[in-house]
Picture 1: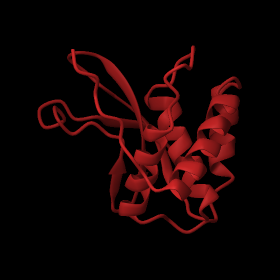
Picture 2 (picture 1 turned 90 degrees about the vertical axis):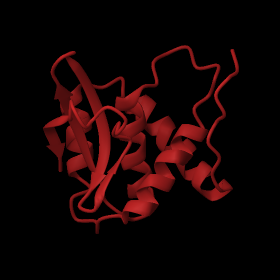
Picture 3 (picture 1 turned 60 degrees about the vertical axis):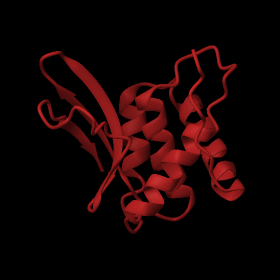
Picture 4 (picture 1 turned 120 degrees about the vertical axis):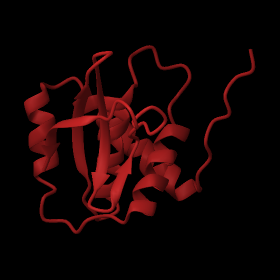
Length: 135
């Protein structure tokens, strides 16, 4: 089995992403309502551009440590992407969604132009339905 190639990003984006991922994993220990309140506090910032949000999402994916013993999945990655956007002075929505057949849950970051981190491969016949969009 060939390991998948890790995405790369500029060092500044990786630095911001590493700080955001550390915050995401730390805040991840708190209840969901506190995470929602933290994202709602970013409401006054201007929206990020879609290409910048996708670049920050790729940077977060590139700094995930292979040695981490806990869970780093879509919820932590999307939350870190929203935090990274906030560290650059911009806002992104944190979206928690679901779909049926098979039942699944997913989280992604979104701006008015589009989303980063939402699966698009099989979303044609089974699209994700946003359940909670913050802020």
